[in-house]
Length: 135
Image (cartoon, rainbow, N blue to C red; front, side, top):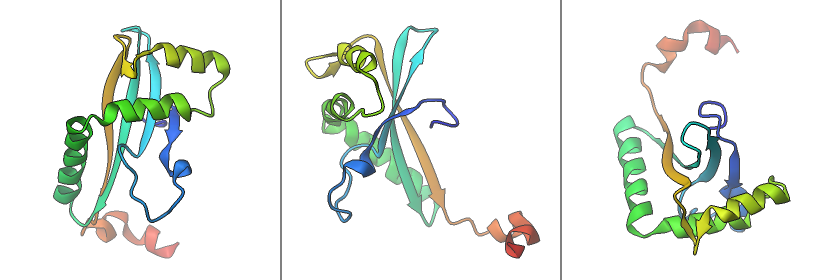
């Protein structure tokens, strides 16, 4: 999301895990950027799904996004934003804190989801050719 959407990561969930066997609750990471045109902050909640088939990966991502909204994970995620944004200075932290009212986003916040979908592609060897095999 940093490279494509230009939205810096504000919370890295992997850094917060204490047990590598625990599943991460909610999104895999949280990114944010200022939208000049709409004068709001776009928050991007990331999902990563790596499966044998594209269909399975996409289905799983859509289910995760649906679950995110069904169980009101948003309040928990925004709590993560305001507690764990270690790369922000005090001014940015205060501004981010002002975006939330009682744990809920204000009108100056837009919610987005972004997904990284990975799957086994049977034509990979043919697509990369001899160059990849030589390395």
